[in-house]
Image (cartoon, one colour):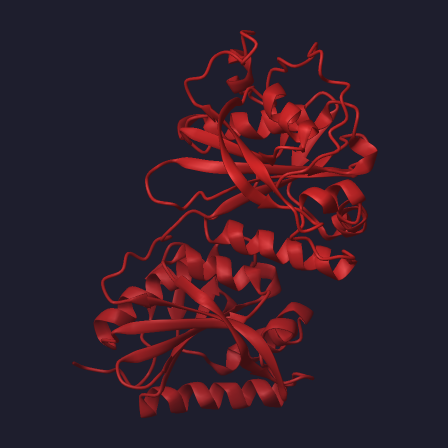
Length: 410
């Protein structure tokens, strides 16, 4: 098969891929002096015009020797970044890309790779294209996911950046794989109702999260939590959330006060990637400041409605949700009842508590077709999604609203 000795010009939606040239030096310097580029790549720091010229020379040499195949990305006649592939042993290529700050947030890199990868599989004939990135580079990972890369895991010390070993992610796309996402990536939508807002977590939630997860009641019912629970533990939990959502396995919300955005709790749906059962588990905990207000029950109702709503109405399209709570965790069981979940069985001695004792684990479930709560009250309004993402509130007059939700499940 013919292998070109210099970059051909390839056209894509709103961009072209072409050979690098001396006219790209100012754009390369601007891109590689950007703090985000320096944070996540191995470009020299400081980055100078001389470094840019050396990069251009390497690009040309790679094409001539058949070891590297780099392209400049051009958008609206302007240098927007680079994409390329490097030989990786027999029948393998390693993928790399970087974008100028002004071109980010417009889908440019994903569109460039949708042009590059088909050309590479046809012209360079690899069996596999490998992708890697420093762990934490979510922007790079989302681009890779969008073109069909499957992330196989995290490797300790995979990446070397300026003499320091860093953990890295690694993934692949094989010849014949669709160049489209292999699974969902769940970004939690904002859900609201009066006095309540469910949103994505932010790093600003760390102090309140640490406070809540050090609370004795939370520690009692969630014995897997570190003790003491530090801010570093909270930051690690945010990374876990990001990992699970990016893999299509879970979606999590921070429960907040819409007036001041204070973190009041957390709700998660997980087990979303387990075959075709369309069943998932829902868990929650409440900050001590949020208890006794019925807020957790309303938040779970809101999250459950999203989970059970059909996909064409913006929901997850699940058929069933399950809540599990220790037999002694009565407040958490009341939350389940307030949210329309019904008793569904008991797993005997299945819940290990902080003190080393075991309790029965009570199961509650709710299926998409449920239209009434265990008390016979009509709860069909729980699944009514408004245009603004809010839901009807069937629990406005719930007699259990005032009970303290001091238990937790997760």
